[in-house]
Amino acid sequence: MIEKINRLLEEVASLTATDEKALEELRIKYLSKKGELNALMAEFRNVPAEQKREMGQRLNGLKTAITEKLAELRAAVATTDASHDDLDLTRTAYPIPLGTRHPLSIVKNEIIDIFSRLGFSLADGPEIEDDWHVFSSMNFAPDHPARDMQDTFFVEQQPDIVLRTHTSSVQSRVMETTQPPIRVICPGRVYRNEAISARAHCFFHQVEGLYVDKDVSFTDLKQVLLTFAREMFGADTRIRLRPSYFPFTEPSAEMDISCNICGGKGCGFCKHTGWVEILGCGMVDPAVLDANGIDSKVYKGYAFGMGVERITNLKYQVSDLRLFSENDVRFLDEFISAN
Ligand code: DAH
Image (cartoon, rainbow, N blue to C red):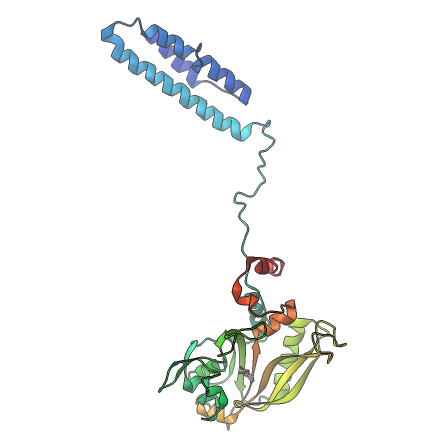
Protein backbone atom coordinates (compact mmCIF):
# COMPACT_ATOMS: atom_id res chain seq x y z
CA MET A 1 0.00 0.00 0.00
CA ILE A 2 2.84 2.36 0.81
CA GLU A 3 4.23 1.73 -2.64
CA LYS A 4 0.89 2.55 -4.25
CA ILE A 5 0.65 5.75 -2.28
CA ASN A 6 4.16 6.79 -3.27
CA ARG A 7 3.55 5.95 -6.91
CA LEU A 8 0.38 8.05 -6.89
CA LEU A 9 2.21 10.93 -5.18
CA GLU A 10 4.79 10.96 -7.98
CA GLU A 11 2.10 10.67 -10.65
CA VAL A 12 0.09 13.54 -9.17
CA ALA A 13 3.13 15.82 -8.94
CA SER A 14 3.68 15.63 -12.68
CA LEU A 15 0.03 16.08 -13.76
CA THR A 16 -0.84 18.65 -16.41
CA ALA A 17 -4.13 19.94 -17.85
CA THR A 18 -4.71 22.51 -20.59
CA ASP A 19 -8.47 22.88 -20.40
CA GLU A 20 -11.56 22.34 -18.26
CA LYS A 21 -12.28 18.98 -19.87
CA ALA A 22 -8.88 17.50 -19.00
CA LEU A 23 -9.25 18.86 -15.47
CA GLU A 24 -12.60 17.14 -15.02
CA GLU A 25 -11.12 13.84 -16.23
CA LEU A 26 -8.37 14.12 -13.62
CA ARG A 27 -10.88 14.87 -10.90
CA ILE A 28 -12.85 11.75 -11.83
CA LYS A 29 -9.72 9.62 -12.01
CA TYR A 30 -8.50 10.57 -8.54
CA LEU A 31 -11.30 11.97 -6.44
CA SER A 32 -14.59 10.48 -7.61
CA LYS A 33 -16.37 7.59 -5.86
CA LYS A 34 -14.64 5.08 -8.10
CA GLY A 35 -11.39 7.02 -8.17
CA GLU A 36 -7.91 6.07 -7.01
CA LEU A 37 -8.24 7.65 -3.61
CA ASN A 38 -11.42 5.85 -2.71
CA ALA A 39 -9.91 2.56 -3.87
CA LEU A 40 -7.09 3.06 -1.38
CA MET A 41 -9.57 4.03 1.31
CA ALA A 42 -11.26 0.65 0.76
CA GLU A 43 -7.92 -1.12 1.20
CA PHE A 44 -7.33 0.87 4.38
CA ARG A 45 -9.97 -1.25 6.15
CA ASN A 46 -7.67 -4.29 5.88
CA VAL A 47 -4.59 -2.55 7.27
CA PRO A 48 -3.50 -4.11 10.60
CA ALA A 49 -4.44 -1.98 13.63
CA GLU A 50 -0.80 -1.13 14.54
CA GLN A 51 -0.16 0.34 11.02
CA LYS A 52 -3.44 2.23 10.79
CA ARG A 53 -2.05 5.44 12.30
CA GLU A 54 0.90 5.72 9.91
CA MET A 55 -1.12 4.65 6.87
CA GLY A 56 -3.91 7.07 7.76
CA GLN A 57 -1.42 9.93 7.78
CA ARG A 58 0.04 8.88 4.44
CA LEU A 59 -3.44 8.63 2.88
CA ASN A 60 -4.35 12.08 4.18
CA GLY A 61 -1.11 13.42 2.74
CA LEU A 62 -2.01 11.94 -0.64
CA LYS A 63 -5.51 13.44 -0.52
CA THR A 64 -4.10 16.89 0.22
CA ALA A 65 -1.52 16.55 -2.56
CA ILE A 66 -4.23 15.65 -5.11
CA THR A 67 -6.62 18.44 -4.06
CA GLU A 68 -3.87 21.04 -4.07
CA LYS A 69 -2.53 19.94 -7.44
CA LEU A 70 -6.01 20.09 -9.00
CA ALA A 71 -6.62 23.57 -7.54
CA GLU A 72 -3.29 24.73 -8.95
CA LEU A 73 -4.14 23.34 -12.40
CA ARG A 74 -7.63 24.90 -12.23
CA ALA A 75 -6.14 28.34 -11.54
CA ALA A 76 -3.71 27.95 -14.46
CA VAL A 77 -6.46 26.80 -16.83
CA ALA A 78 -8.70 29.72 -15.80
CA THR A 79 -6.15 32.28 -16.99
CA THR A 80 -5.04 30.54 -20.19
CA ASP A 81 -8.00 28.54 -21.44
CA ALA A 82 -9.07 30.04 -24.76
CA SER A 83 -12.51 28.51 -24.38
CA HIS A 84 -13.26 31.30 -21.81
CA ASP A 85 -14.55 33.84 -24.28
CA ASP A 86 -15.82 36.01 -21.41
CA LEU A 87 -12.26 36.64 -20.32
CA ASP A 88 -11.12 40.01 -21.68
CA LEU A 89 -7.52 40.65 -20.76
CA THR A 90 -7.69 44.20 -22.11
CA ARG A 91 -10.41 45.19 -19.63
CA THR A 92 -9.58 47.87 -17.06
CA ALA A 93 -8.68 46.24 -13.78
CA TYR A 94 -10.90 48.54 -11.72
CA PRO A 95 -14.05 49.59 -13.53
CA ILE A 96 -14.65 52.39 -11.02
CA PRO A 97 -15.91 55.61 -12.63
CA LEU A 98 -13.45 58.44 -12.09
CA GLY A 99 -14.64 61.62 -10.41
CA THR A 100 -14.50 65.00 -12.10
CA ARG A 101 -13.04 68.28 -11.05
CA HIS A 102 -15.67 70.75 -9.80
CA PRO A 103 -16.63 73.27 -12.52
CA LEU A 104 -15.51 76.15 -10.30
CA SER A 105 -12.10 74.50 -9.91
CA ILE A 106 -11.85 73.93 -13.66
CA VAL A 107 -12.50 77.62 -14.33
CA LYS A 108 -10.33 78.82 -11.43
CA ASN A 109 -7.42 76.74 -12.76
CA GLU A 110 -7.95 78.17 -16.23
CA ILE A 111 -7.85 81.73 -14.84
CA ILE A 112 -4.67 80.90 -12.90
CA ASP A 113 -3.13 79.40 -16.04
CA ILE A 114 -3.79 82.49 -18.14
CA PHE A 115 -2.37 84.92 -15.59
CA SER A 116 0.61 82.66 -14.87
CA ARG A 117 1.53 82.92 -18.52
CA LEU A 118 1.44 86.71 -18.11
CA GLY A 119 3.91 86.55 -15.21
CA PHE A 120 1.55 86.65 -12.21
CA SER A 121 2.19 84.39 -9.23
CA LEU A 122 -0.27 83.10 -6.64
CA ALA A 123 -0.97 84.71 -3.28
CA ASP A 124 -3.18 83.58 -0.45
CA GLY A 125 -4.78 84.98 2.69
CA PRO A 126 -7.16 83.91 5.48
CA GLU A 127 -10.94 83.67 5.05
CA ILE A 128 -11.47 84.78 8.65
CA GLU A 129 -9.98 88.24 8.50
CA ASP A 130 -9.76 91.42 10.55
CA ASP A 131 -11.43 94.70 9.72
CA TRP A 132 -8.11 96.28 8.77
CA HIS A 133 -7.31 93.94 5.88
CA VAL A 134 -10.87 93.69 4.52
CA PHE A 135 -11.96 97.32 4.89
CA SER A 136 -9.69 99.94 6.49
CA SER A 137 -6.50 99.16 4.55
CA MET A 138 -8.62 99.10 1.39
CA ASN A 139 -9.76 102.69 1.97
CA PHE A 140 -13.34 101.97 3.06
CA ALA A 141 -14.72 104.93 5.04
CA PRO A 142 -15.65 104.07 8.66
CA ASP A 143 -19.34 104.37 7.84
CA HIS A 144 -19.21 102.48 4.51
CA PRO A 145 -22.36 100.33 4.12
CA ALA A 146 -20.30 97.18 3.39
CA ARG A 147 -19.26 97.25 7.04
CA ASP A 148 -22.89 96.81 8.04
CA MET A 149 -23.99 93.50 9.57
CA GLN A 150 -26.54 93.15 6.80
CA ASP A 151 -23.73 92.70 4.29
CA THR A 152 -20.93 91.16 6.32
CA PHE A 153 -20.71 88.11 8.58
CA PHE A 154 -19.10 89.07 11.87
CA VAL A 155 -17.16 86.46 13.81
CA GLU A 156 -16.29 88.82 16.67
CA GLN A 157 -16.88 92.48 17.36
CA GLN A 158 -14.49 95.08 18.80
CA PRO A 159 -12.02 94.38 17.45
CA ASP A 160 -13.98 93.36 14.39
CA ILE A 161 -13.19 89.93 12.94
CA VAL A 162 -15.22 89.08 9.83
CA LEU A 163 -15.52 86.50 7.09
CA ARG A 164 -13.81 88.31 4.22
CA THR A 165 -16.32 89.83 1.81
CA HIS A 166 -13.82 90.04 -1.04
CA THR A 167 -10.35 88.80 -1.94
CA SER A 168 -9.12 92.40 -2.07
CA SER A 169 -8.02 91.75 1.54
CA VAL A 170 -5.18 89.64 0.09
CA GLN A 171 -3.91 92.75 -1.74
CA SER A 172 -3.24 94.27 1.65
CA ARG A 173 -1.69 91.02 2.97
CA VAL A 174 0.73 90.98 0.03
CA MET A 175 1.66 94.68 0.12
CA GLU A 176 2.41 94.71 3.85
CA THR A 177 5.11 92.07 3.37
CA THR A 178 6.38 92.73 -0.18
CA GLN A 179 7.88 95.72 -1.93
CA PRO A 180 7.26 96.17 -5.69
CA PRO A 181 7.43 94.82 -8.30
CA ILE A 182 4.28 92.91 -7.30
CA ARG A 183 2.36 90.72 -9.72
CA VAL A 184 -0.07 88.43 -7.96
CA ILE A 185 -3.43 86.84 -8.37
CA CYS A 186 -5.34 85.66 -5.32
CA PRO A 187 -8.07 83.06 -5.82
CA GLY A 188 -10.29 82.32 -2.86
CA ARG A 189 -13.68 82.00 -1.19
CA VAL A 190 -15.57 85.04 0.06
CA TYR A 191 -18.70 85.44 2.17
CA ARG A 192 -21.63 87.84 2.15
CA ASN A 193 -24.74 87.98 4.25
CA GLU A 194 -27.18 87.32 1.40
CA ALA A 195 -30.35 85.26 1.23
CA ILE A 196 -29.60 82.18 -0.89
CA SER A 197 -31.34 82.14 -4.27
CA ALA A 198 -30.59 81.20 -7.88
CA ARG A 199 -28.72 84.51 -8.30
CA ALA A 200 -27.06 85.04 -4.91
CA HIS A 201 -25.28 82.91 -2.34
CA CYS A 202 -23.78 83.53 1.09
CA PHE A 203 -20.42 82.31 -0.17
CA PHE A 204 -18.81 82.43 -3.58
CA HIS A 205 -15.37 82.66 -5.17
CA GLN A 206 -13.23 85.46 -6.53
CA VAL A 207 -9.88 85.93 -8.17
CA GLU A 208 -8.13 89.17 -7.29
CA GLY A 209 -5.27 90.62 -9.32
CA LEU A 210 -2.68 93.17 -8.18
CA TYR A 211 0.17 94.72 -10.13
CA VAL A 212 2.42 97.35 -8.54
CA ASP A 213 5.57 98.80 -10.07
CA LYS A 214 7.06 102.07 -11.38
CA ASP A 215 5.32 103.58 -14.42
CA VAL A 216 2.22 101.41 -14.47
CA SER A 217 -0.63 102.84 -16.50
CA PHE A 218 -4.30 102.18 -17.20
CA THR A 219 -3.24 100.99 -20.67
CA ASP A 220 -1.28 98.14 -19.08
CA LEU A 221 -4.40 97.12 -17.18
CA LYS A 222 -6.54 97.26 -20.29
CA GLN A 223 -4.14 95.15 -22.33
CA VAL A 224 -3.84 92.47 -19.66
CA LEU A 225 -7.62 92.27 -19.30
CA LEU A 226 -8.13 92.10 -23.07
CA THR A 227 -5.64 89.23 -23.27
CA PHE A 228 -7.41 87.48 -20.42
CA ALA A 229 -10.85 87.88 -22.05
CA ARG A 230 -9.64 86.51 -25.37
CA GLU A 231 -7.86 83.56 -23.80
CA MET A 232 -10.89 82.74 -21.68
CA PHE A 233 -13.75 83.36 -24.11
CA GLY A 234 -12.17 83.16 -27.57
CA ALA A 235 -10.09 85.34 -29.89
CA ASP A 236 -13.12 87.30 -31.21
CA THR A 237 -14.05 88.58 -27.76
CA ARG A 238 -14.23 92.37 -27.38
CA ILE A 239 -14.09 94.27 -24.10
CA ARG A 240 -15.44 97.60 -22.92
CA LEU A 241 -14.66 99.49 -19.74
CA ARG A 242 -17.34 101.55 -18.01
CA PRO A 243 -16.47 104.13 -15.31
CA SER A 244 -17.38 102.88 -11.86
CA TYR A 245 -16.50 103.36 -8.22
CA PHE A 246 -14.57 101.25 -5.71
CA PRO A 247 -13.00 102.70 -2.53
CA PHE A 248 -9.63 101.09 -3.33
CA THR A 249 -9.16 102.17 -6.95
CA GLU A 250 -9.09 105.56 -8.67
CA PRO A 251 -10.10 105.70 -11.44
CA SER A 252 -12.29 102.59 -11.28
CA ALA A 253 -14.06 100.67 -14.01
CA GLU A 254 -16.26 97.71 -14.65
CA MET A 255 -15.40 95.53 -17.59
CA ASP A 256 -17.91 93.97 -19.97
CA ILE A 257 -17.15 91.41 -22.65
CA SER A 258 -19.09 90.99 -25.85
CA CYS A 259 -21.77 88.42 -25.01
CA ASN A 260 -20.16 85.04 -25.66
CA ILE A 261 -23.54 83.42 -26.21
CA CYS A 262 -24.84 85.57 -29.09
CA GLY A 263 -21.45 86.96 -30.12
CA GLY A 264 -22.62 90.50 -29.33
CA LYS A 265 -25.75 90.54 -31.48
CA GLY A 266 -28.06 90.66 -28.48
CA CYS A 267 -29.92 87.80 -26.77
CA GLY A 268 -31.91 87.03 -23.64
CA PHE A 269 -28.73 86.26 -21.72
CA CYS A 270 -27.19 89.72 -22.27
CA LYS A 271 -30.61 91.40 -22.03
CA HIS A 272 -30.27 92.33 -25.71
CA THR A 273 -27.34 94.67 -25.04
CA GLY A 274 -24.64 92.45 -26.61
CA TRP A 275 -22.47 92.93 -23.49
CA VAL A 276 -22.06 91.08 -20.17
CA GLU A 277 -20.22 92.37 -17.11
CA ILE A 278 -17.37 90.21 -15.83
CA LEU A 279 -15.15 92.16 -13.44
CA GLY A 280 -14.23 95.30 -11.53
CA CYS A 281 -10.86 97.01 -11.87
CA GLY A 282 -8.91 100.24 -11.65
CA MET A 283 -5.68 101.96 -10.70
CA VAL A 284 -4.80 101.28 -7.06
CA ASP A 285 -5.74 104.37 -5.03
CA PRO A 286 -2.51 106.01 -3.75
CA ALA A 287 -4.08 106.04 -0.27
CA VAL A 288 -4.19 102.20 -0.42
CA LEU A 289 -0.51 101.97 -1.40
CA ASP A 290 0.49 104.30 1.45
CA ALA A 291 -1.72 102.55 4.02
CA ASN A 292 0.01 99.27 3.15
CA GLY A 293 3.60 100.48 3.30
CA ILE A 294 4.28 101.26 -0.36
CA ASP A 295 5.41 104.74 -1.35
CA SER A 296 2.75 106.12 -3.71
CA LYS A 297 5.16 108.83 -4.92
CA VAL A 298 7.39 106.14 -6.42
CA TYR A 299 4.99 103.35 -7.31
CA LYS A 300 1.69 102.94 -9.08
CA GLY A 301 -0.48 99.90 -9.54
CA TYR A 302 -3.59 98.41 -11.01
CA ALA A 303 -5.99 95.87 -9.55
CA PHE A 304 -8.93 93.81 -10.67
CA GLY A 305 -11.37 91.36 -9.13
CA MET A 306 -13.68 88.83 -10.75
CA GLY A 307 -16.23 86.28 -9.61
CA VAL A 308 -15.40 82.69 -10.53
CA GLU A 309 -19.11 81.74 -10.52
CA ARG A 310 -19.81 84.57 -12.94
CA ILE A 311 -17.15 83.41 -15.40
CA THR A 312 -18.31 79.80 -15.05
CA ASN A 313 -21.93 80.81 -15.73
CA LEU A 314 -20.82 82.54 -18.90
CA LYS A 315 -18.68 79.64 -20.08
CA TYR A 316 -21.10 76.85 -19.24
CA GLN A 317 -24.47 78.62 -18.94
CA VAL A 318 -25.23 77.47 -15.44
CA SER A 319 -28.39 79.31 -14.55
CA ASP A 320 -28.70 78.55 -10.82
CA LEU A 321 -25.85 79.40 -8.43
CA ARG A 322 -27.05 76.83 -5.92
CA LEU A 323 -25.97 74.01 -8.25
CA PHE A 324 -22.34 74.85 -7.46
CA SER A 325 -22.66 73.93 -3.79
CA GLU A 326 -25.22 71.11 -3.86
CA ASN A 327 -22.76 68.59 -5.33
CA ASP A 328 -25.45 66.74 -7.28
CA VAL A 329 -23.47 64.10 -9.17
CA ARG A 330 -25.69 64.49 -12.26
CA PHE A 331 -24.62 68.14 -12.48
CA LEU A 332 -20.94 67.41 -11.80
CA ASP A 333 -20.92 64.59 -14.38
CA GLU A 334 -21.66 67.12 -17.09
CA PHE A 335 -18.14 68.48 -16.69
CA ILE A 336 -16.28 65.21 -17.31
CA SER A 337 -15.16 66.28 -20.79
CA ALA A 338 -14.07 69.72 -19.52
CA ASN A 339 -11.57 68.15 -17.11
N1 DAH B 1 -13.54 93.69 -4.44
C1 DAH B 1 -14.53 93.96 -5.46
C2 DAH B 1 -15.80 93.20 -5.16
O1 DAH B 1 -15.79 92.31 -4.36
C3 DAH B 1 -14.02 93.55 -6.82
C4 DAH B 1 -12.90 94.43 -7.29
C5 DAH B 1 -13.17 95.56 -8.00
C6 DAH B 1 -11.61 94.11 -7.00
C7 DAH B 1 -12.17 96.40 -8.43
C8 DAH B 1 -10.57 94.92 -7.43
C9 DAH B 1 -10.87 96.06 -8.16
O2 DAH B 1 -9.29 94.66 -7.20
O3 DAH B 1 -9.88 96.86 -8.59
O4 DAH B 1 -16.81 93.49 -5.73
